[in-house]
Length: 252
Image 1 (spheres, helix red, strand yellow):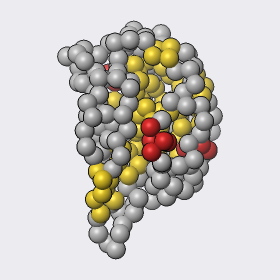
Image 2 (cartoon, helix red, strand yellow):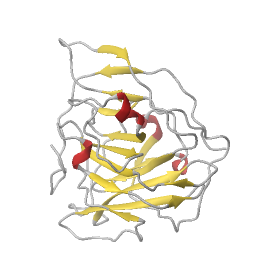
Image 3 (spheres, helix red, strand yellow):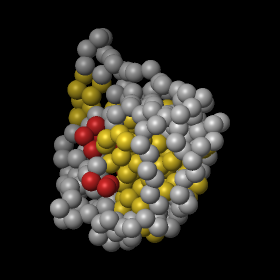
């Protein structure tokens, strides 16, 4: 049996208040039952020592029914900068069957290496190879927020189908996923099924291995419907943004 999903608990790390940590009540983001999630993130494409030329984001349908991605988008902003998600946006289309993957090919670096499998969507987002924030948004419109210096409104949070903050990110679910390198990507555990509302617990690092819609479907076992849970905001000390080795993130 694969892990069940719960409603994503969005945590924001926005700064230190008089040298202390402040804990406040946080909004929860209720993903649709059996939501499509971000299952892989890789931002080192085309950098020195990278096995692949392009960055990519991989999506996965955890539900037991087809899900349309028409009108959805993947949006990105830097780990701790002031740019908004709207500055890095790639549109999505098509329908994902249960257990099916969707590969979004993104920007290429300056050091060509291996090619991705046939992408299902393409975009020009240039992600950091070490730290950043990736949002799966149930809208084609760019979000005029970044979750930290420009907080997301309740309406904007309601559009988030999934969020992955990795490395020194200041907007994430639970805790950030591990920092990445040019040779590693972030993988959602259980083939994409794990979802405990905590990026740090749900993701691990490994050599990038992108999957696309032609990859054999791997449906999750059990009921993947989310269960709402109370959450809180955590304000630790911010971390500086880590640029890519050979190119800067798309926003600062």
